[in-house]
Length: 273
Image (cartoon, rainbow, N blue to C red; front, side):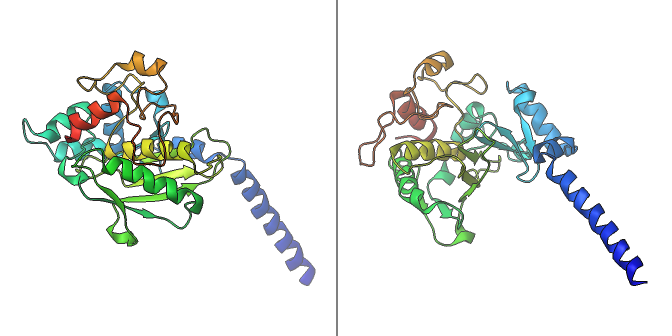
């Protein structure tokens, strides 16, 4: 009887082990892509394609309920939130939505943005993050980003993930269309982040996504009046901190901001001086 129970336990353990091995061999992204999209996510996907995004470049991430597009994360609920919150005709919200493709950056909601540093965020990057927030805060009287130590009061949760197989150094969630900034930003700790000015430039870029800015050198979205076009930014590494490939350029840990002419124009156009 004991021998029978022993054999049975070995058999069951073998099944469990094999099942575990099979699961470990599957890529989570592949699992994500096999899952059907909700009606809201499908509507958002169709809307983004209409705006010029390529379907092949929009990878669904079901854990975060957002489409991955490089380092940008676009909420599944963008289209439904956009339809539920129509901006007043002629308002700054309407103007922002025209450029940001319905992302819904709201002028007034950027005046008191608070970020919370999660426990998994690298401590050596906190200094660069504080400077990144400061540079945005002095860029316009209508943008203020500061740190909070109360997680429940935060607008942006700043954390990390680890994946050595990914090319992305960081990711940020775009606004969801309800008038708030994007709810989180993360750095990939599998990538080297020295915590210097180059890291600060990266974090300025990611906070820009939280505010609703897209990449200056890519073809979807709109063109902010007074700024150079996509071709210019594709060939100029320092034309904007919102270029998809981020360069340190003139960014320093100092009160001298490194905004380019186009950056200043884009900030003034959306938020005022």
